[in-house]
Length: 223
Image (cartoon, rainbow, N blue to C red):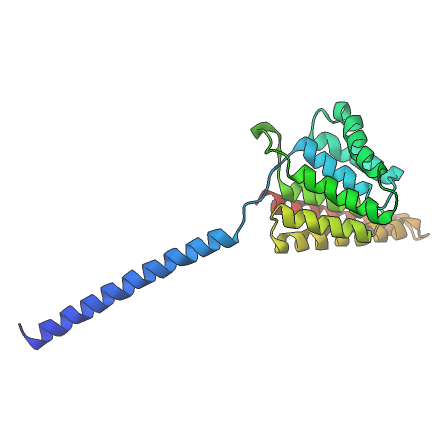
């Protein structure tokens, strides 16, 4: 065998070895990615509604704006919301009413949320994605324009436990904050004494911006 042929064979073997090593590395990387990326936990509509109620009760009281928004979102998640609403409220409130001080109250909130998240997986027809849940929780938490410290802590706890990507949560949080800024600007514009046609143009532009954000969030939830 000539020296050239021997060299060619060595090169072929070296190439085969490199390819084999690359395949092994690729396989290991895929395993690592799958291991690192945890699957999001789906919830039943009832459990999602319980978590929403715990959120609006986080600061120790449920005001009328929070209750109205809860009543508005509820039917979108569960067509039987009106039938279930009272016992969901009663179940959550019974747990919270046992607390004798603020420290115990927060512990009762966290315990209620933890138990709700540990409940069995829902049926196929009643699954709520954690991203949809968290967006609704953000909407409820920011109903008065700002988020309470307890609400923020509970939200982050739910995000961790349902395995939502942190980048997704931060984008949602940024979106709701921008919506709140637009709402404040809309209120200010409508309260000014500027000419109607000027106000109308500004209101229309701000409303468009808000709708664009909502559409962007819908896309984010559906991913």
